[in-house]
Length: 206
Image (cartoon, rainbow, N blue to C red; front, top):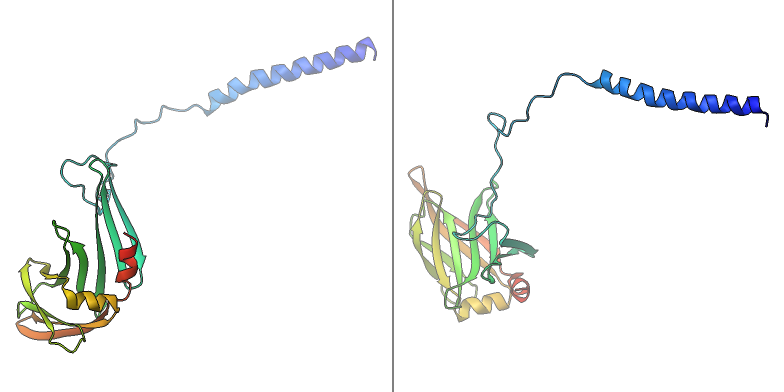
């Protein structure tokens, strides 16, 4: 390689460095405009963050309360765990929708404070007769579950899991549910069937 060609290449390389090093700052200067406005922490008017459907019990720190939902045939196992106290409370629930697609009934298998199993039954507000009939299809009269109380949304009743109900769960029967509902001054009977199949599977998963 001759001295002249080497000098040319060195000059070309130096020129390239000058171009790269000299044009970049100029380009950056051209990109810079007026300073961006300070970011606002306020939400847009009319918009809000949807609160969690899980409400923290009093005294429980965020992140220390866990809800797990496990679907089974016809029933759903819901467990709430307080990690700070190492406590877990579970229930097995079923919801029944009517022909219009609205909720007409729900019930949950839960445990009382002393550990005894109990069924919690819920109907829409307006239970006229003050009771819910549960036909266990065991050749005996329907179980009359007295309504404990109502608010603006629903009525609630409690039924201990006695030997009859336990047998119905064990054999996975389809039971009959009925109650009288007062709407617009008139009383109508709401009657349907509810399957107990799936309760045993959910229980075994607790």
